[in-house]
Every structure is written in structure tokens, then in C-alpha cells.
Image 1 (spheres, rainbow, N blue to C red):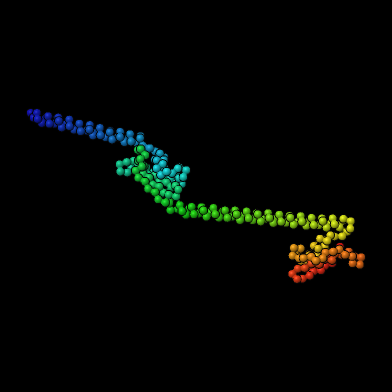
Image 2 (cartoon, rainbow, N blue to C red):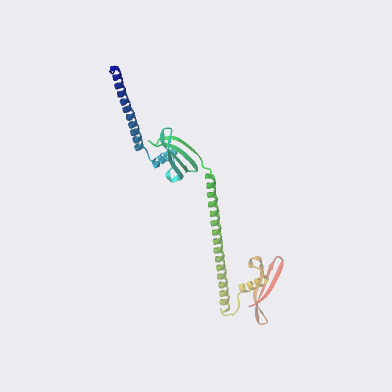
Length: 225
């Protein structure tokens, strides 16, 4: 015959085991529900990046390089956001649940100064090249203008000489005679002092008697009129 005390003990043990299993199942379900809720409430990688940019005071247009990875650290789902802007490297750890900044650091980018220096040198070289080309174009234009001016002056002089010869007397002007004398001497009018420039009749032949001084020397020419 079974002992009543043994029967009650077994009954209590069974009830306790069932209750314990129920508690464990409830805990598991609660944990799963909590994870599901946390997952549904999590922010995405872009939002996490925006939280980091906002904290750094950097506009998205200033970002030259970026990288985002999700991670589970110290019991939390986080995003590690790394980006480069304004010559600095930024590193952020962002809570994936609510976007809270957990940790952050920044340092000057190693290639920032060299890149800036290269850009400055490149711009200076380009500006120098453009300036040289502009100077060459200006010099060419000036030379063309001078040549055109000289050609116009020569044409005007030739027309004046022709006009003087056809004026009726058939003689060149005194200024033309002086110019011919200076040309023969290889001098310019501004460098000499004329002492005589006169049309004379030498045995029935019209001639200009031209005299001028330069540097203590006297020059005399007879130019056929």
C-alpha cells in the first residue's frame, strides 16, 4: 500500500516542474518580443549617418568619403559611421535604436594638406599658363597693329610724294628732300639740327641744298628736285 505522503510529494513536484517550465517559456517569449520590438524600432544606416553628420556640424554635400557598418557591442545594436569632410576623418558609434551618439572621434586627414597643396599648385600653374598665353596673344596683336600702322604710314607717304609730283611743278617738297637726305645719312630727324633746306637752281637744274648737324659733324646733301 502506497504512502499518502509520498503521493502528495510527487504531486507537488510535478506541479512545481510544470510551473517552472511555464515561467521559462514566458521569459523566452518576453525576450523574443523585446528583441522584435527593438528591431522594429531600430533606425536605418542612412538615418544613423545623418545623426553623425548633424553632430559633427557637417553638411552632406561636404562628405568626400563615408562608410557605415552595423554591429552588436556591449549588449547594443549600433552603427559605426566613418566619413571624411573638411580635411578631417570622423568616426562615430551610433545607437541603432534611437540614434544616440555613443562615442565619437576625429583627426586631420593625412592626405588633406597634400591634396590642398596639389590643388593650389595646379591652380597656380594653370593661371600662369593662361597668363603666358594672354601675353603672347597681346604681343601678337600689338605686332600686327604696329605692322598695319607702318604699312599705312608708308602708303600715306607714297601717296603724298606722288601727289606732290603731280601738283603741277613736278618737284618734290622740301620735307621729302630732307627725308631723302636723312635716309642717305642713316639718321632720324629728331637726332639732327637742320641749318639749311633750300631749293636752288644749279645751272638750270633744280636741286635742294640740305645741311644739318649731329654730334659735332656737318652733313651736306644735294637732292635732285
